[in-house]
Amino acid sequence: MQGGLARQRRRSAWLFLAPVLAVLLAVAGWPLARTLWFSFTDARLDAMAGAGFIGLENYAWLADDPDWWRAVRNTLVFAGISVMLETLLGLVIALVLNARMPGRGALRAAMLIPWAIPTVVSAQMWGWMLHDQYGVVNALLLGAGLITEPWAWTANPNLALGAVIAVDVWKSTPFMALLLLAALQMLPGELHEAAEIDGLGPVGRFFRITLPLIWPALMVAVIFRSLDALRVFDLMYVLTGNSSATASVSVYARQQLVDFQDVGFGSAAATGVVLLVAAVTALLLVFGRVRLGEAAGR
Image (cartoon, rainbow, N blue to C red; front, side, top):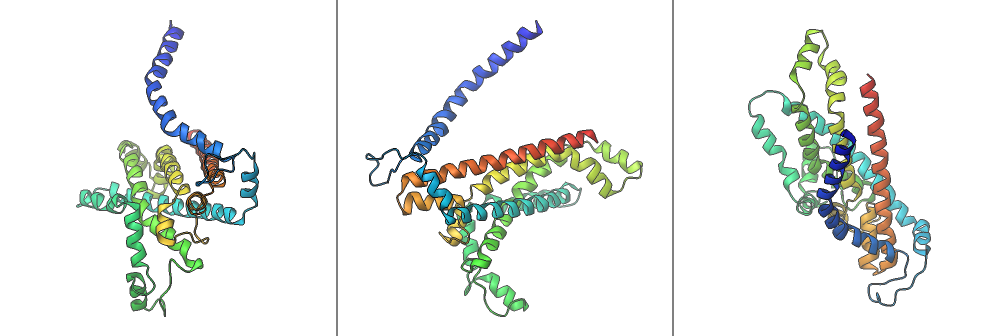
């Protein structure tokens, strides 16, 4: 009887999920399949009807293109550094806002302002602030004596990627803090009270109680933010355009598809973006599962 009930529940679950899966297949599956097909052709934007099958030639050219690998490196560096900083800062902010203090509600609302601003708007705003001649950032640094001449934050290849990372950290840290704050508020206070009575200090309580309990939520936040960072386009494109010093894989794919009108090669690059995101996500899932097992063992 229990086995029959379980099978009935599984059938009911698939029945309820069927409409959602159908919509996802139509909205996401069909464009992805078309992109994959075009990646095996020599299609161009001005001659789509005459596209011919060329096999893996586009992928071979992609593998030999140093600009593609530079874009992959830029994307991984951007995602790795920005997500790490956002996670650390978000955790600190969440711990502060989780404490009982006056004005906590107002601080929570103010924290969400950078995240609520559209990315294109915030990127343009920071582009003006980082301007080498008229930007307020250079004016403040010059006034404080930290630099002796204005820096071209978004035009200098040695500074541009760091500037983009800083803007992304400013915008996306509230997202991480919000998710982690929600996880912290779900923790039972009795555990910390018992640990405090047993003589465990704040640092010990964090590493032995708080961190293991919020680890699943932390990994979910990291995975969501990593998915977004690996697909970054608007932030880099608005701040630095098609500069090879900061171009992500999405910027590279857009350049091939739109600027060069090479649909076949651009589709291969877009497929490469999907594969890169899938590979990093799989690694994060494996890492999170291993650490969860270690936490359970402790």
